[in-house]
Length: 551
Image 1 (cartoon, one colour):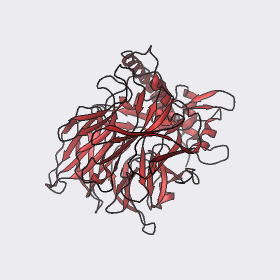
Image 2 (cartoon, rainbow, N blue to C red; image 1 turned 90 degrees about the vertical axis):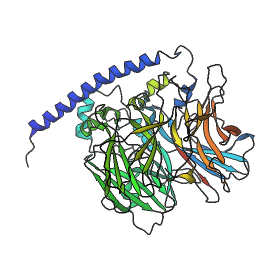
Image 3 (cartoon, rainbow, N blue to C red; image 1 turned 90 degrees about the horizontal axis):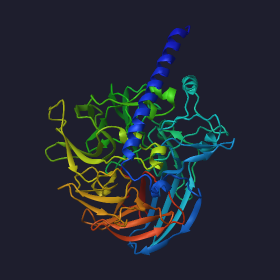
């Protein structure tokens, strides 16, 4: 079959024009963020900038930490926390290459081992092949953020070279897998928003083998290496299964699959959400009976992804379109309900469950549009740029088996307290809960996260931990607060919260242990160096009781 070069060139021209228009729009948006940032005291030092700078040491082995306070005797286990450790890479020509976005920070795995009131800390880089690749002056990987140095010529070149996966100097496939930790079939994986995982050894924290695709690891028949999968796979403890989705390569459907704990049981394709537009989805929702895909109108253009080599550069917000909600029966794989609501964007769902009347409840943290994705460009956050508050909201869907099919459902605000990186007591996963824990700042200030919030969903009130002085000059910046239940607990808030906190004054970080019933500090264990702002982690108890690895 002859190639119609007229059509090819016309297509390339359309992509180039799209990229140029995208550049103009991004410039206008970036100036808007700068204007927002002017509301902050940007002439003052930016203490949290340390959280977006390279680790001083990429490898640490069993550093015994100084513990202040008392860690409960029952707390014995390991906390793994993935996230960025490198943002700036020296190239072979001696220049410095900066990753464009916080989400592009190069992966390092952190390990805290808690035993008999003592804490040991280790970490290892999980992105060395990717760092080696970035050190090449002509390296052009697909990344999340937009590279301001990406020229039109490079974009056109990308269209023709995209079929070749980037390789490190030693020939290995490279990928930066840096978001969260999952334990699947007894093995530990670093995961991200694509159909790739990186296995690691839980003892040494070293990577095991190369980055692999879902179909290689989980042996899924009919699985495609799609553009998007959720970092946050669901773990159903009652069924002993891990659930997730992956988009198809054309971006026109999402396939749902389940991985049984037993490696002798085959991974199965459960069902397909057909004719669903490709969007950036970091998570989904699930209940005991249903798998729920919520698709906000943040559309991904595959031609632009090829051209820009940037996920952010391939996305557009369609404000006049609704957020779509698709519900699949987990038993039959059939899509049993399709509805919509007003447009919003979301990184993280919180929990899903069914009420006694059969209605389905989904809680999630929302934003009115996609600005929160774009303000995490590294230049913006390093410069003290304005951030946006997430809001805890709730959607109540009709009983999918009732035959009721509304065109639109309401979204209810649960609390006005700013929140992100939400967690709950893992024992209440897939059932009704009362408390949600997350990080946030002072409402309306657009600041980086300085507080840990405990939100009571019954009345929307929040109890706050804030270790900063009250003079408006924060120096402590917590990240995701993970709830670990006490083994014999009856109350939902009986356990501990653990968070890694950046101490900008002392230029280090510490593991914070809070009493979630009162949101007061119980203990802290200080690391000798700083840990950049990370994303997600999970705790695995020594006695194999309840882990936090639910979503």
